[in-house]
Image 1: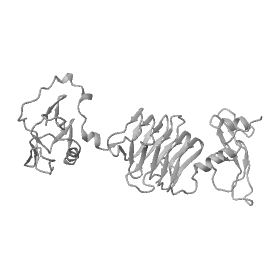
Image 2: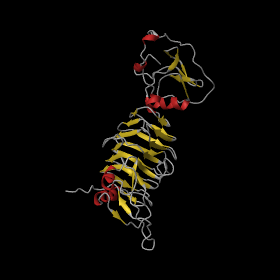
Image 3: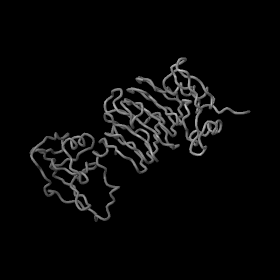
Image 4: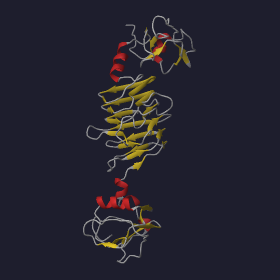
Length: 362
């Protein structure tokens, strides 16, 4: 239809110009060159005014009164227009950006690419679910997500940021960015994994739901949010209905968090409670040694077993211990080796605080 105001723009496309059809037969319908099925046409008819025209749906004509009922029928094709053809400017003068946007493109959920290796901004769209991920999305460039975006993850899908990638999702109080599962079930999808040292890694006013089915990258503990290394900031956000840990933070990571909430997460051994982490980071002096009866190293601590740490990543600790226990001071430096008699406690080594409060001399 082309003779009614606010009409639904639909027709054949050929040789870079559009030729609207007045008598429209709906079975082989193309919008911008893509064949639409009847379900898509039906969806469009609910959202966009359709002008009065002779639309045939398997032999029954619709004259514009009410909404047509689209039914499957025999094969159809576009006939020659029965009305007067509109005046169409020269094809070279048509700016595609000014053409009407198909409502099917506006309201349909779009697929998220499995690899994002160029700087990308994901914008909020009119759809209830803006994007769907059916895989682990590898982010190796700057990914920015605007307020109000909703991304739905299929079973065991996830999102990982590594190499030169970064993820910035800044929602608002009224328009949070939402990462959720296709099904609202705890542990339905994998979660979000950070492993880059970018100051742009920030989640603000974000909701992470139904995650922690498994690790995003082998072989880490399952968590809704995994910060294995680098730096990352989480603020004013909510993590809920996780199948395992809400957050796991690696010993080499710089994780900052504030004003977040956590609910209905099925935490297990190895999870790092943000509240406990902040207290722990503020209550140990970098370089101090203690005995810990658990079978893992808490965040901010490492086994005092002689391991070598990266000099740059642990510059504060290196400035305290230097190469006293080994290492060349360039590529790395060694921790002290302090075994604990197995007869006294279950732990085999003492713990050294590697990321705490710096012990000032004054």
